[in-house]
Length: 351
Length: 254
Image 1 (cartoon, helix red, strand yellow):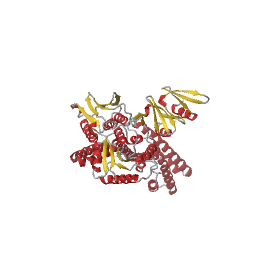
Image 2 (cartoon, rainbow over the protein chains, first blue to last red; image 1 turned 180 degrees about the vertical axis):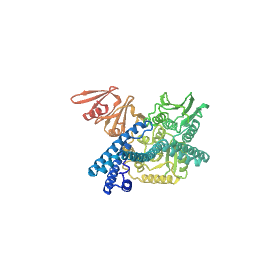
Image 3 (spheres, rainbow over the protein chains, first blue to last red; image 1 turned 30 degrees about the vertical axis):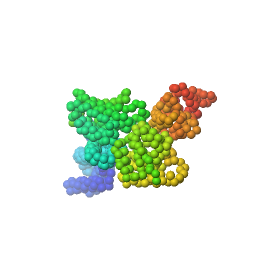
Image 4 (tube, rainbow over the protein chains, first blue to last red; image 1 turned 90 degrees about the horizontal axis):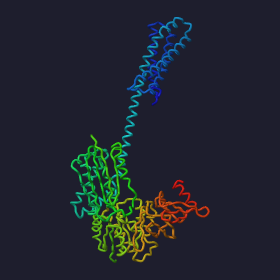
């Protein structure tokens, strides 16, 4: 944060004008109420105002570097008192020394000067206090501005990250192959083509909702996964078999949106894409006291070397569960005797 | 002009239906077979020797590219795929056409008329310097896609080998001998190709004529004066050059 007064030309001007006015007021008082000689009036008003004006600028730094803490204000207040005494002390000392030196021969004035010392110090303390309060206001509004800007930046970053996630989740090949199937069905079976378009729309709309990163009842999540599988079934026919075993109480259990999509996609990519025989994908879930366990299995041919390396899909799901449940919950997988099994443990959440 | 015999190799039924429907209007084109995986397609192409094939890329058992690698008979090729990748530019010059799914009837007609004119010019006896499939193979070799499996033809059979099962590879003129626990396989390819396409974390070019799978190394022994030799888990020995030793040191961190 830059100094709110010296930071720009306009505030320097205003600040100088304020002090000029203070100086003029003081001078008028001296001249017409106390009837001091004009040279004394000008010197005293100018020197004390100029000095305070300069020292007052320094009061910004304790404000800037001692943030006011609501929990322990005593420390901040003490720091300001110390800083205030230093500034005031310096001001009183310099003004007194200067004025004493200039008007050493005018004994009356020196006497007046010494008499008004306490009064000057008190007035100075008051002005100092006002300055500090103004500085705090300025500092707070600057901080608020900065925080708002930072929040906006962060929000943008989160949006981008989520959009990237979205991009990686809906496989464009899935989309184009599905559209090709629809193109074919419009000639051979228009009714089925229409159904497939509706399923694809429902699934895409749901995947866009994912941007909000919310939780939905298992029923809704699985409904869209069934759309996804039904679309793939149009492409692969009897080769793709699937079965859902859902116990009633699981249906309302809350899960993150699209959490199962990468798992079903993997099951299809690594087994159905690579197989000429029927492949079964099974989903089941059991609700426990404070959690739900979901298991997805699919057949695979252990004898066929995969064209692909190991996917990042599973790692992504594991990462997402870890983030969403702050380390609780888990994702594990095994490949045994031609069956690939993924087990997810969802802790219960309360919204 | 004679009837053009074609074969469709495509794993999705609706996609095959679409091709058949689009082909109906062409009296000169006959579909002699439809296959839903690379293996069956390969066999049928070698037996039926069609003039042209409609070939999907992503398929079970063998991909379209892998199928072309081991094909004996060389028909004209029209790719049909949803893959919109760098490969397209490379292939479209040598394949008759590259149809991106979904494609329109007009786009399909365009591909077929290209096919017909190419077959005509072939029949008129235009001498081809190098077959188009040879060029497609070449382009495939130049792509930078990582290799996870290798397709090899051996005594009439097609073998699909996971790269994890390869112990080491040896250059033999225009061929590469691939050694696995189940035997050795000869593949027409350069060692440089394998060096570029195998996972460099796993495979190291230890010698001008050898690439070794790091996971298969049992120990490294000194050999003659300043050379070394790898002793593999299966007992085979692989010579290591001075440069190869350097790369091994970096990879194995010793």
